Amino acid sequence: MALESIEPLHVIPRVESIDEISALTGQNLRRLRTRRGYSLDRLAKISGVSRAMLGQVETGKSSPTISILWKIAAALDVPCGSLIAQPHDTSLQVLTHAKAKVLSASEGKFQTRALFPYESERKVEFYELRIAPYHTEIAEAHHHGTIENLVVSRGTVEIVAGKHPPQILGEGDAVIFDADVAHSYRNMTSSEAVLYLVSTYVEEVRG
Image (cartoon, rainbow, N blue to C red; front, side, top):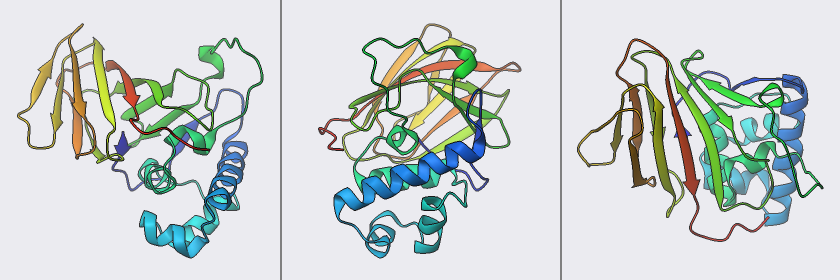
């Protein structure tokens, strides 16, 4: 779900402040990078994100775009959620709406809410997507082998994946596609569209 965006990543906090989430992102990036044995220069070369930006993210001085987060995650071979992970020790967790982390792009016209606890090792991620009326959100190609399974809960949405013809989905319709190509989500209606997304990573993720 690598989202093409040039604006800063907006995390709508329900408990943690944006500064706290930025600090957590920086700590996780440094931990994952050092575990891979990558210098900032090496990670910059692999990810296509500048060394300066990586340094700012690590020190919590910059809020990266969603697109940058996905580029970094792909280079580290981890799910994007690992970069804003907060460890949990309990075997049962209630993910209340009030405490959710909502990622916002395109001036708030596209929002994603994680419906799973962020952890360092995960092969499947589950999200709620909200798309503003008539908005189109473009996603970059994900890591090789990534599969997206989408179901529309409300509205009518056009999905375009790679060279496949556009698919129009109504309420209750679902689609599954290889997400290692550029793809897009377009709300075709005059009210907010709501979708649920399951992203599956084929390879075992090593933290």
